[in-house]
Length: 93
View: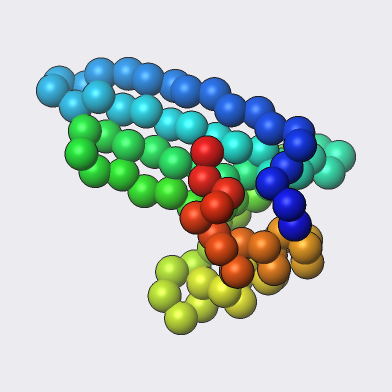
């Protein structure tokens, strides 16, 4: 999978006490009412990022650890799964 030509990114920021929060989301593919995205969230100096599937109000994220690659293959279309498993960081927003 090449870097998507259709790319939606947005930043949602807010403050909670002394911590500044930011979320960025990159659209990997839209298939009907399902979006496959990569999200990156930060709060102060800490943060996390992961690919996810949004479908009908449900959010599906891959498992951690030894099940990560196989759960990506179950959640995402084959070309996206292969690209994420090869170089996941490339698709961060």
